[in-house]
Length: 263
Image (cartoon, rainbow, N blue to C red):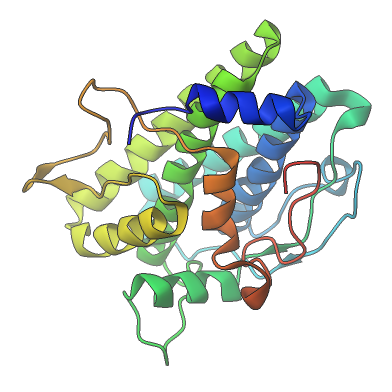
């Protein structure tokens, strides 16, 4: 699959009346998810209530707790990413103003077990809690970071306002740094088996290319196409990953779906 979103996808978004604000709100929903994950893992607490308000139904966050880190440098990295994600939420809310959507209900508990079972790196009888230890936390981070990068890469061509486009590409750069750090840490720990399982599950769910941390038996810290360009996913492909099967599984990471027009 070619990198990015095709002209057909952009035309479809326009024909459905998808405005720049709708795309930024779609991104804001994803930033809510990442912020809650990292903040709870690094600090034991989620977003401040003032940063969760907006249009639509405001939901609760299920699960999440401080990770008992053993490596202090690992913990510092987790906190750095958490603060970046928190800043992304505040920034998008400031850009959107009164048009910003509220934080929807987020599941950081059963959703991970469901994905782990689908990816088959645990059995149907086992559960997976990414907050249990730093290695499990790293696996959870891997699930999110690549999705975030491809989401921003895919959404960028749909934006018409240059200021919004600049903001989106700036966040894309930050997410790419995060993803690279997470992938490098997994590579150092020889976690290619579980990474490949997750990548295969994401590819199947979205119908888009995905790459693990090894490719042709070589390090693959930066997943790119033949032109050295990072992959993009359309909003629909991203939703297929974070919903993981739709209504039958209560839309997984977002049990009541996203807030906003792209949901």
